[in-house]
Length: 210
Figure (cartoon, rainbow, N blue to C red):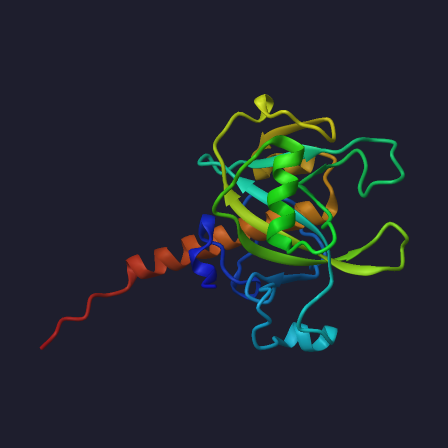
């Protein structure tokens, strides 16, 4: 899949500039590009070779949904629940696969079950390393990218507290799930990288043909 065609102009992780919204820098997340996350097992990247697998074990999925104003749909998770990841934080909507499901089938089902959301054009964005609740089992969260412009307050949420749109510059004031914040910072960096590339193209001199 050509990553330059992703919603929001997302590019690969190694091409991205620092985020423009001024949030404090986080340690480099264990993130792979959408191409590395492909379920068709493409040629292994350096990251994949270092991790020793071309088809990582996926323990969860999530959706990074962006509206036309550049805001992100965040999910406030239940607090005081030891049986869930990142309780009481703002995160991305998603969930774990059922037996036999592909990651795409999982995120499609989770969006519908949790909020009756149907996002037809979801594409793989990044693949995150993950540690399960037992503290030992290692896996990966497949994050998908999509666009949606509805009213968050009208969604019939079945898990968690609420869904709400936020711009990236509000994140420092929220209790964020760490990996969700890293994903949003990556998306912001990709947007800045795309804008910088477009600006360079606009300034390129026109060569007169003889």
